[in-house]
Image (tube, rainbow over all chains, first blue to last red; front, side, top):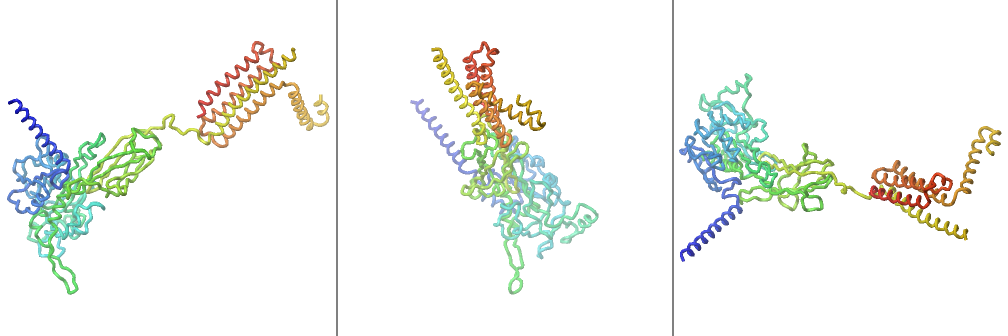
Length: 494
Length: 127
C-alpha cells in the first residue's frame, strides 16, 4: 500500500517536471525574452546611488521596455561584471562619468573582455580623466585635451554656451536604410559634455554629430568666458582645432567577434555574440534635467518672430541610443542557407564546372515591439561571393519579391575545379554583421558527363558506318562470287 | 614500241603522247588481264580511299572537334584499306608462289576476323 502511494507520488512528480519543462521550452521558443532586446534582459547601471533620481526617466524607460535594472555604485565590489569567465549582465551602462576611481573589476581590460563575451556597453565620457578616457583611443576615438567641453554660441539662447541643442532631423546615419535615431526623435537634443573625433576605424560610426558652429574650449578660468588657449595651441602647430560637425558626440561601435548563424558546421565561430558599444560625450544626455528642459526657438511668422517652447528629444533619443546598443534595432540574423542546381530542388554534394547554381538565403530582423524575429527584405546591397582564394564570382543577392526575407540569385559555376566557398560578408554600419561561409567542391565533368553524338561529328560517324556496311556487302558479294566460281568449275569438270 | 616512234618527232609531244598511250595500255591490260574478283576488291579499295580523303578534308577545313570521332572514322577506312589490300595480295593468282601455303579461304577468314576486331575498336572509340 505504502509503496504504491510512493510510486504514484513519484509518478506525479515526474509528470509535474515534464509539464514545467514543456512550459519552459514553450516560453523560450515563443519569444527571445521579456525585454525588447534580442540578447538579454539584465542591465547593470554603474552609477552613484545618490544620483539615481537624476536619471529616473531613462531608468524607468528601460524598465518599461522589460529590462531588469541593477544599480551598482562605482566603488562597490558587488555585483561583479564577470564571474567565473561568464558575464553577469547582458548590458552594462556606465553613467558615472565623473568618477575618478572605480572598483577593482571595472577596468578597461574587463570592459573589453565584456565586449568579447557579447555584453553590450553604453559608455559615457566625462570632462575629467578616468579609465574611459584611456579606453577611448582603443576604439579609435580621438579625445580633445581634458576639461575642454563642447561649446557653441549658436543658436542664441539664455543657457550657458556649454549646454547645446543639437538638431537630429538633419542627420541620417549610419546608412541609407537604417538610422539609429529614428524619425520618432522630435525636437532638438540637449547635450553637454565633450565631443570627439573619429579615426578611420570601419567598425566605428557617428550616431550624433556636433553642431557646425561648435568647438571644444577651456571653460575653466571664468564662468561663461571661453579662453583662447586651444585656438592658440592649434595655431602654434598643435593637434588641430577641435571644431565643427566632423566631431561627434555619440558614436557606435559594432564588434567583429562571432558572426555566422550558429547553425550547421559552417557557422563561423558558432556563437552569435557580436556586441555593441556606444560612446556618449556626456552622461547628462540621459538625465531628467535635459529630458524636461524646453527648447526655446524663434519661429518666423507672418507678423514678426514668435518664441516657441518645444519639448526636447532627449527622452526618445536616450531610449533609442541605448536601444541600438542593447541590440533592439538593426539586428539581423541568417536563418537558412540553401543552394541547388537550376530546375532541381535538392542541394548537391558537389557541383560540376559551368553548372547553373541557385543560392538562396533567408534573413530575419529582430522586431523590438513584438519581440520576435521577423523576415526582413530591406537589404538592397547584399552580395554573394563564390570564392577559391579570390572571389571568382561576386554577384548581387536581391530580395525575392513576394517572399519576405528571402534573397536569391542564380549564377554559373566557374570553369575551374577546386573547393569553393559561398561567402556572405555583409558589414554595414548600424547593422549586425552577417558573415556566413559554406564550402562546396566544384569538379570537372565525369568521363560520361561530356556531351555525346555531336552534330559536327556526323561525317565521321557516317564514314565509320559506311565502312562497316561496305565491309558486310563486300563479304556477301565475295562469298557469292566464290560459290558461283565453284559451280562453274564443277560444271566444267562434268 | 609506240613511244619510240613518237619520240623521234618532237621533244614535247612524246611525253604526253607516250603518257596517254601508256595509260591506255595500262587500262587495257588491267581490263583484260585482271580477274573480276580482283576488280571487285579494287572497287572496294577505291571506295575506302575516297571515304578517308573526304573525312580528312572535312577535318582540315571544318572541324576536328570530337577528335576521337575523327580518329575512329579515319582509322576505320585506313585499317579496312590495309586489310583489304592484304587480302588482294593473297588471292592474286600471280602471287601464288609467295603464298603457297595460304589458301583463298584462309586468306578471306583472316580478313574477316581482322575487320571484325577493327570495327570493334572503331565503335568503341567513336562516341
